Length: 208
Image (tube, rainbow, N blue to C red; front, side, top):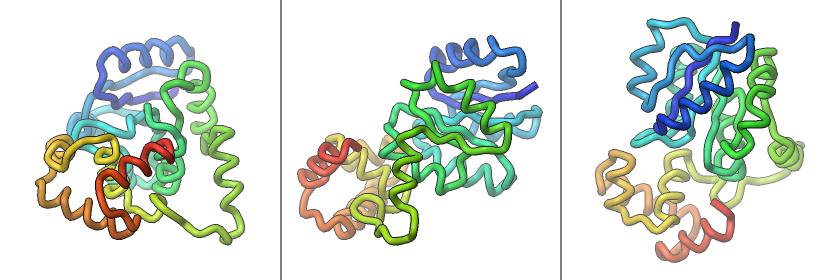
């Protein structure tokens, strides 16, 4: 029996996902939580094999949660399930140690297949991600643009690029305004941007 924990801040989505998984004879959901603190609280009290994790939880970055999980157990299996396109977080998630990444749009038809593949000791990669990874083989391609940003910088750029103010981003990520302003300055320097308008334009043009 494959024992699964679902981490997503939308109760209705968690419930629907649980129904899909428990329709399979060899799968059971042993925990459903809506935040990282809730996840950490239950980890030691239940037996589990796989965590399905949203990439963006209130005040939390899924990749940072993954790093904490891997610090506790370097053999942990985490499948990211997100509204964000693979072009935004897919490669970053795999590089950080995730077992797979898929969008919520593809979940109904691909989720069970992905879980079985991961439990067989493999990574789950969509055709889009396989192609992107193949294009980077050989060590000849250099990181450009947003690929040079840290995970947190990338997250902040996405939020600022969606039109949010520094204050709004700080509230959403539970950071100080000064900290977000520092991230903004670093992003501007790395990306050679002069204003938030440049950032918004870049985010839209690159489908981020």
